[in-house]
Length: 578
Image (tube, rainbow, N blue to C red):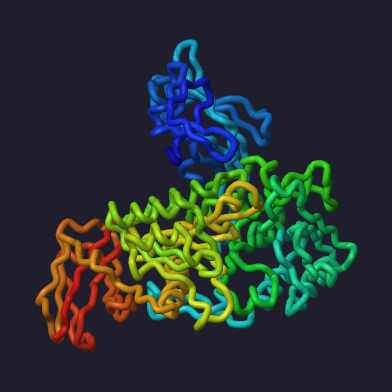
């Protein structure tokens, strides 16, 4: 039922009744246990299509044909009126056009069948920006650039330089700097504190939200005139922690090349910046910056320079009111905030999107549904999976055991005896080697726990980019192998029918050919069995149909995997060099 629309009309609910704690719960078996009382119902949540800087489409589905409409506006009041779509359709698609770049819209979709109307909830959407869309990812522990794909896509390992990198971005702030940080210590964070003070002194509006339950000694090193809002800590059973680690620079600057969002897993403390396994992600995009500014101001209580505690919302008080799909210069980036956006469902959906391979590294993994999701991808769908979690919190956990049952030695615990610090990542990589299978990476502050999903303030990004997914894979490859694992080319890579390699075994010359190749550019890669790209070449689909040869290739004797990828092509075959 994950991903299906929540009914907005009255329903009859069937299910299994069981006791949960001191209360009772009802467990529907599937979507058919939710029987609507009206004739027409929305069956898939409205979502945007073809987002550009001058508009987008809104699409949804209904159970029976109806006449489609949307109400929309730049505020939740939907003040711009309505637009009629198709009649007698179960798959409406309605365009909003003539917009500005990075323009925010609120939309309610509805379908009508006679006297019966099915309404969606009001959701927010945002058009594409005129920004560069540059995405920069950094790691503070070693990476393995030998598995970079393509060769030039090397991950950035900047040992002992996370603080300097954060400073460099903060120094770019011109008008505004909004910071949401869980932990800001005073030790070895002087560069960050100085950069924030310098920004304030040059006239930048600085606003900071921090966790109310942490000491956050680094805040004492800031100019006392900089406003800081601490998250609520009581009642303890209601509020979690303000666990975000993000900042937003110049979200509303008239120059679309100025806004930047920083996200990732890194707190601002000495160990987190230098020792613990962490990542930083910087994205230059005004639409995403406005989305993060919306989330910040929900906690801040308004759009002004000073916080309004009476209006601020944290934890379970927040609403699902930000756009989730952002077109970042042609790359789809999904954005979710916890606990309002049910991020756990988005993680599960991302796991379920894996067709060939998935890798994950996370501090906490206590959600059984996510563990069962990984188990199913491996056991039922034949997906190659490898994962590692920090053993300080998951040493004998049920989630670990669920996955280990099907993953075996590919499910590891972080080895504190041989590795410094802790594993603090919260990332998931899907199909990074398969260009045609929507390669992506999920990262952010959200640990894979119920507390993160239901109580904490968190942020999560899903970046649909082969380049970014592969950069995270370079970090994972080093992390996993450094902890006694052996991630590389799996046996499933030999399952292909269209790629012919000849001769095989081969010596000094290798030929290959494919039939019915799409008219596109293809990347041909030779990989060693540990996943390193040793040869790469670009060819056209027509050349591959006619036959491509590699002569005097200088490959050592052994077994290699030939991988051919394009937007519509994924083919692999093993070859033996004698």
